[in-house]
Length: 478
Image (tube, rainbow, N blue to C red; front, top):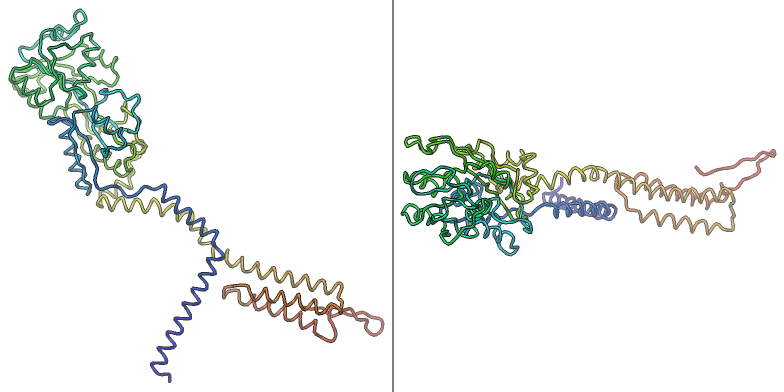
């Protein structure tokens, strides 16, 4: 009975032999299948290039002026992103023009911004995509004093009668408020004069309440602090433009919002009659290099935050992909057609980073498996066929030699025949085969040796010999 030491030795010896045999098979596998393997590596590399790197954990977004609805909206977006493990840093700006300028600057780290439609010309803007329209922004005009007839706000001799001697704030230059106010006034034939001032939203609210100015244009949401402050002030009124429909025909991005009598405050019946407000829209704009996963997260945030029913919008109305300021992002187009239910399901059950990782892996692995699986399945057969072909080619050479011997055997060339057999045998010895083809390999070796044995006989089977009685007989190999 073998000792424990001998058993251990035999075990390690068997393991060593198995490793060596496996390594030999592996190297032989690489030598024989390297074209297929290179193809698969190039395929994976190509998919890796096409696929995006992991999304960033920090994103910068421009909102707008202090106290504006965009600032409030930005905070809701930041909370949504925080739940997904992404830091959304909010940047206060002077308004839409600055947001556009910074987004189009390829060296600026800013990646997203809220921008009102119609604020700036987008004709020559490049490097920016839209993720859709996310909200209405009513164009408010609050004024002090008694309620005026809408006719007071219509053109008289190319001028607005009300604005002739009033001190009006039309927002700081570059802001959405300023752009919309100038657009409406110019379209009505009125050029703002020296009595017009440029105040940011919060300062304009204070100035109007303190009587320092007579009226204020403001483009902001119904829920913004500035708008709510002015709506609650009983000393202020809201202008209604009786020709609101005409403005929407001349300025396509504008929309008419209808407000029923008393909708803002039933107790004081404010407004005292049905009114129509003009409204622009807020667009969610991004740097066109933004990671697709972050774009998808912005779209999900817009659906959850801006898709709720509001004072002016119905549930599910936003995000909208109609009348966007700039070309839509390919991700937004895909989202509009199909919200990627797989990614939505992942986000509902997994943290964002893990959902994106799973999505990324599936995106790379599935196409790879679909293409590579049949190839990998075919590799064993491919290897066996290559080795079998090598053996068959040597069999063919041996058969050709035999046929030559049969048709024209010359005993004087016996040494030459043997030399050719030696060459065939050497070629057979250098064939690398798997264990499964061992029987074919050694059958080839045996056949070569058999032909050699026939050549070395005293009587050669490849010669025809005349038999007794005038008959003929022959002996043939195999």
